[in-house]
Amino acid sequence: MDSQTKVAGVILAGGRARRMDNQDKGLVNFKGRPMVSYAVAALAPVVDGVFINANRNIEQYRQFGCPVISDQTDSFDGPLAGILSAMIHADADVLVVMPCDSPLIKTQHLQKLLLARAEHNADVAVAFDGVRQHPVFLALKTTLQASLQDYLTGGHRKVADWLAQQHPLQVDFSSEPDIFSNINTLAELSMLEVTNHLS
Image 1 (cartoon, rainbow, N blue to C red):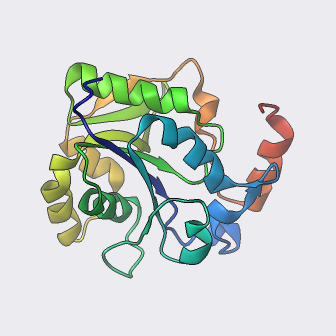
Image 2 (cartoon, helix red, strand yellow):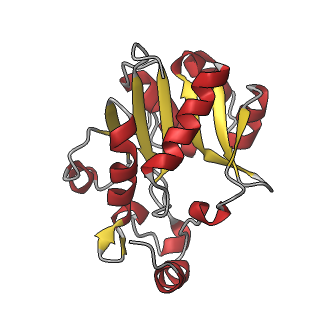
């Protein structure tokens, strides 16, 4: 990748997690470590700086050594609001986005997204598992900030709809679709801990 391209990363931990008994998902332990710590470990090697987007438990998130940024509004407007906040705060050309609840994602997966975006000079690169897109695994140009702001100001919230407007590059992860396992409930957390034997 061009060494002049500044890259920031954001971990999305700003949701209400209603299906997780309203626990803050990023702070819930997976195999003895808070889930957000896996995201920090995956992102840090491929970006110039990592932000955590959170709207509650700010002090706890600060303990992971990254700047914590909240949405521009207090209405829990979803992942796009967190992405917009990161674009506003990051002094970077490209933003890498991942959620706080997918502990199987590793550095090499995010590197693959970044390299594909750079190779095609795409505005957005999105992960694709062979069946569907995973719209919160992204590498995108921060020049899309105005477009995203307009979309949110218009009352829209759906990530997939905004992405479709950007004609994203799909990056093929069909050889390992299980890496996108995300945890929405305590039952899913227990199941993934049992079935996943990765370090």
